[in-house]
Length: 296
View (cartoon, rainbow, N blue to C red):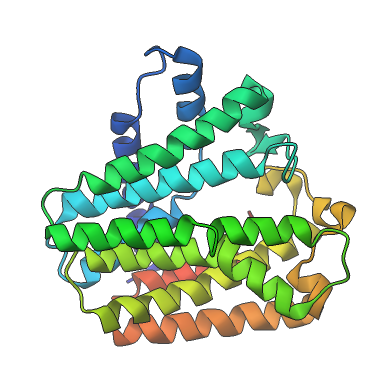
C-alpha cells in the first residue's frame, strides 16, 4: 500500500477515536463546568492518537471481532495518556506552560483544576475500558488489569518518579533506560496488548506484540529527547531545550546524539520484525517508521 493510503488510514483512525472521545467526555457545560471544560480542552486539543491507533490495528490483526470495543479501548488509552500529559506539565513536575502549541491545562485553568482534570481523565479511562461489553468478559478483565499495571508505580508513574529523582545527576545509561521504558514505552506496549487481548489472541501473541510496542515506544522517547535538542518549537508545540536546563537524564546525554539515532533505528527494525511475524499488513510498520522520521 502507498504512503498516501497509509496516511488516509491514520486520519480515518484518528477521526474515529476523536469522535468517540467527544461522545464519552462530559459536556463542557455539565456541572462542575470548569472541570469538564478542562477535561475536554486537555484531551481533545490535538494529538496524534498514536497509542489509540496502535490498539485499533492490533485488534484488526487478530480478526477484528469486536470493533466497537477496540474503539472504546483506544479511547480509554487516549484518556489515560491525556491525564499523564496534564500532570507532567504541572509546575511540580516538568513545568511546561505549553502543550500542542497552546497553553497547558494548569495555565489555561489553574493548577488545582489541572490536578483534578488528570484525576478525572484517569478514572474515565478505566470506566471506558471496563464498560466494553462485546468481547469475552475475561478478555476485558485482562485488558483492564494490563492497563492498570502499565499505569502504576512500577511502570508509568514509576518512570516519571525516577525521571524527577534523576534531575541534576550525572547521566547513567541504566537509569535512562529504566525511565524511558516505563515512562513512555510501556503505554505503547499495552496499547497493542489490549487490542490483541480483546480479540482473544493467545498470551504468547499478546506478549510478542507488546514487546514490539515496547521497542517502538523506547525509540519514540529517544526521538523525543533528540527533538528537545534539535527540534523546532513551532513544530513540536512546546518549549524545547528544557531537558538540558533542568539537568534531566536523556538518551543523548547518556549515549550521545549519533548513538541515539542508531539505537532508535535499531529498535524500530526489531519492532517491525516482530509485528510482521504476527501478520501486520504494513500499517504498524508504517506507524513505527514514522516514529524515527517525525519532527514533532
